[in-house]
Length: 417
Image 1 (cartoon, helix red, strand yellow):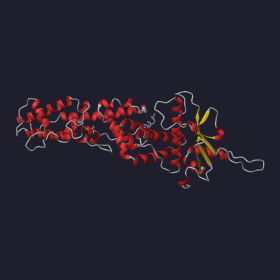
Image 2 (image 1 turned 30 degrees about the vertical axis):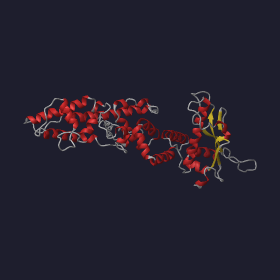
Image 3 (image 1 turned 135 degrees about the vertical axis):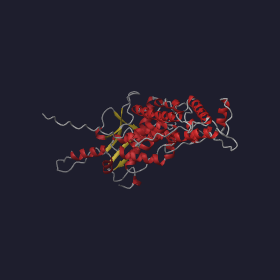
Image 4 (image 1 turned 120 degrees about the vertical axis):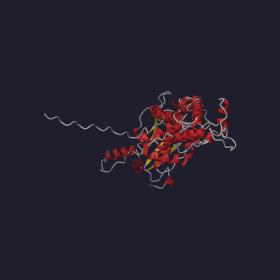
């Protein structure tokens, strides 16, 4: 590999790449391009196979060593070319054009711009994506925007460009390295913008980002989950059935846990205190579930599971038998004061309920549940319970994972006469 310090214009380069007329061009090596790109490999293989000699028997110079990034002429909003394509200067067709220096829009262009300005902005983004593509071919780590949303758009366009030239595997490796270098930010975006990150990871086939975002999306309450197909960046409708199928598995698991909680019985039925403790626990459970907690999946659906998992019925004050919440429940229910004989039986049922919910309290995400997602509620009594992110996505469950081929049934033995 030639020294990267000379990138992007190598004195010994034999291929000129022109992105913008009069502004941006590269001089690269055909050997590097053909080793990393199916497009250039085929292009140069065809040229050498078509090599001819002149009247004196000498080899002609090979044409087509100058490539231009050309776009189809913009006609209207629905038909202008967004990405463009590198073509040999000798093969440029009518109806295509290059971007010029005069087309470069100013940095302070307003968000609301004319169609012509929109075309120029898009073409400039394509030229930048081609620039990053060739950087990766020479093992130069491209720079992306500090704005994470813009950076994701740049990553996607760079990958789209790489696919045009048959280099998607190499670019995907570079993109994954960039994402790992910014792992904390990516995981935070998965927690806050799970649908957008899921589409992003699906387009690039980045396993760990897809799993993280999918686990979070599936765990959302009904209000947040039902809006996922309508977010701005949900551009993968083929993923929607996959998400709904995983959501059904998530709800089925909650229903199974809920059924187990409802079925808990005291260990001993011979005393009145055991029966009273069971009625007390069942009444508390029914009221919590009636508020939309649990499989109801309303806004605070996970509160009941966090209550049980963290043993919040126990008071931190040794002089108090139960937490404030349980005491309020007793007062609102007009129940008699719980005495020392009844308390152990109630604690026994709640302890067993804690064991039941343990399996769904395991966080399958890389980031884990953190209250800094809700700083305005931190340490507050009404802090929203973190969604239950126990649905682990296995490798074979990924949408792009190869599906097992059905095994053909063995042929029936021939019947004997």
